Every structure is written in C-alpha cells, then in structure tokens.
Image (cartoon, rainbow, N blue to C red; front, side, top):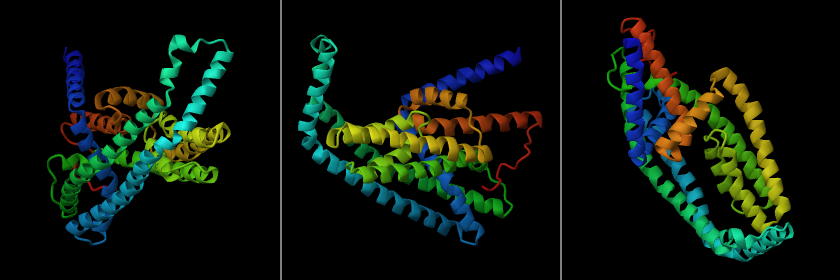
Length: 340
C-alpha cells in the first residue's frame, strides 16, 4: 500500500507547491533567477578561493564583475528601448502603407475584410501602442534586474562561506550543503546555452548591421536571452527585427532577416549545441516540453527560461534522495562537496 500511497502523496504535494508558486510568481521568479545566476557564477568565485583569495574578496570580485556587466547591459538595452519608443511614431506612415497593401491583397482573393474587421487589427496606431507597451515592459525588466542582483549577492556570500568551510574540512549544513551538488547540471546547461547564445547573438547582430536594420545591438542581445527559451526562442527573437525590417526596408530584407536568423540558429542548435550536449549534458526533448508546459503556467513567461534548470535540479534531487534511501541515509557524494 505504501508503494502506491507515497507516489500519490508526492504528486499531490508537488501540485500544491506548483500552485503556490503560480500565486506568488513575481516574487518566486526573482528568487529563482537569482539562484540560477548565482549557481552559474559560483565556479568563478571558487576558482578565486582556490587561488588563495579570501572568500570575502572573491565574493566582491565576482559581484563587481556582475554589477559592471549588468550596468553596461542595462545601459545598452535600456537606452535602445528608450530611443525606440521615441522613434515609433515615425513608422506610422509606413505601417499605413503596409495595411493598405494587405487589404488590397485580401480583397484580390475575394476575402471580405469588413466581415472579419481586419482593418481594426491592422490599425497602425494600435500596433504602435502595443509595441510601446511591450517596450515599456522591457524597461520594467531592466529595473527588476537590480533586485535580482541584490538577492544574488547574499546567495554568493552564503556560497563563499560554504566553500571556505568545505576547504577547511568542516561540515556544511542547511541549503548550502546541497547547493553545489544540485547545481552541477544547471551550470552545465547554462554554460552550453550561453555559449550557443553568444554565437547566435553575434551572428544576428552582424547580419542586422549589414542589412541596415535599426537597433541591431538590441535585437542581438534579445536573441541571446531568447536562446534560453527552448524551441520557441527563435520565433520570439526573429519577429521584432523582421517586422522592423519590413516597415523600414521592405519585404526583401525582411525575408533575408528571417532566413539569416534561421540559418544561424540552425547551425547553433544542430552543430554547436549538439556537440557540447553530447559531451556535457543530455537534455531530452520530452523533458524540455514538460518543462515549458508546467513552469510557464506556474511562473509565467519566465517559466520558459527557468523551466529546464528547475527540472534538472528536481531530477537531481530525486536521484540523490533515492540513493540516500537505498544506502540507509548516506550518499555517495559528500553534501558539502565543492563546486567543480
């Protein structure tokens, strides 16, 4: 009976926890994102400690690097978004031309546009208002990143203390005793996706610069972050620059943007990521799909980014706890083992 009851209790508890995360998604997203970034940066901090740097100084160096990088990124992204909001009205005449062209094409195929109220959905001002709302939300994300950095600082301080204790041979208790162990797969995943995302971002930025699309650096940075969204990230990254190219430069260059983004993304996914995944981490398609469905519902859009890392952590937790039960409460790996 226990073999049936225990899984049912586990599933029921998991559903309650996920529902609670859904209710507190804004706060949970900040905490989980801070943990994700901290886990990714911990090897850098531990390397400094191994080289003889004191834990407090190692944390300071890591945090300083993150803050400087974050500020530069915020200036680039925030400045580009602000400038784009200012120039949006200049796209209004071209949007009107595109709307009229679409209406003529639909009428040529015998489609009654008035019946479906197509003109209202293609109203240029409506499109610009929607774009302004999305860009303003982007500025809100930039400001939220400051809170994430603050939470991450305290996580790194705790991690540095745990690393120092482990090197002295002391036992580490609490959540930090599992921090290094559960973060192994997360660090592998983040490093692989970051590497491929950097390739995609540079390739997309160069392509947009050559084509003369407005705000190429902004779209390149966004393509890097959208690379963390499995499967759907490519669509989210290609639509804004392709649409902007259509408005400003015409359909020919918009088509080149789509084809170029597709080829760069395909090379990254099928050559670079496949090679590194085979060596470092194997993430199944089923795992990715389940992660997207569950975590996007629970955490909103950020769930698409955090889904795979969270699932990797839960999978490692299950493996380790199962091993502990079979070994009678002992594991094959010390809980306080340092990060490698």
